[in-house]
Image 1 (cartoon, rainbow, N blue to C red):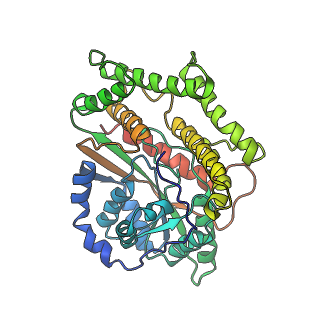
Image 2 (cartoon, rainbow, N blue to C red):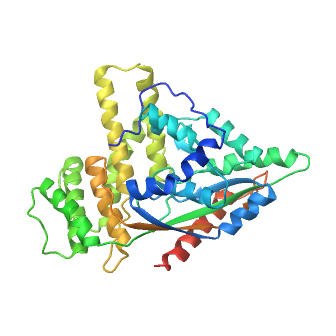
Image 3 (spheres, rainbow, N blue to C red):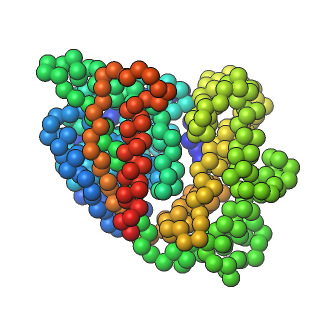
Length: 398
């Protein structure tokens, strides 16, 4: 389990408001992306939409998909391209990875949000940034790194809440002004030798499974076989035996086995439609007493085990059952193997070279009031539809 939970009292980490360091790091950013993440080429589509909103003085939110860990740095390149540095809402645990990273993240425009509870300081700061309007705000509404560039996970409605809060303030200003959201889709392409870069990783995983190297198999079949083996091991661990049947059903059954008992204990049986939101709600219920030190050592061990189970359910959800097929884009194979390695070791090695196309959608104007009727927030529906359209459009650019 990756170290996303910090057992310390939360303290808000504010953004560094000066643009000085962003301009200082601008020249180094392409070098860092190339050296640390293998990103060799960046292309832009639709950036004129963002330039128009900047010129109009709107309060701006950028709502990108979040398929790779270095997406914030990729978005910073868009900021350099339009000559307007961004501010970014980032999970608090990132600021707890050392003093230098904390210093660096602040200097490049990041501020913290506490995902295990209500963070009023982060909400207030985000709203103030949009109202001020001098810098666009980046919000990754999926809430997690998906490693599935051909899918968009359910979006968290905090995006609409913050946007509407800012729109109310701007509507009362003299003269009144607007808040807009630009959905942004990051489409990464792998342009190297896929089999050559993935084979060493697959062989290491096969050794972990005590298998002979499955080199004679075609790459697709080899990856699928490993995925089936890893799922079967988890079924044996939690269900007592490896199951048969459609992969989607097996995956869903294991997720429910992991989450339902925890939700009965901690949430009175409440189940959100989104697996990611279910895991988040469980963390919000389990973690506070751990932070305060109000539990025994035995109870602390039990809760860590429960957090591990909820994390596993979230990770299982991030393997869409229909994601791999014969002839699927090579990036899907790459992402799946990266996730295998990350879930087994907490770290995925870099595979290069990558290129990215950054698609910026036209502005979605945010009304200060929510339209009545309908379960889905209309702002979130429009953002989702725009991201889905960009996903479809960008897939044909290979």
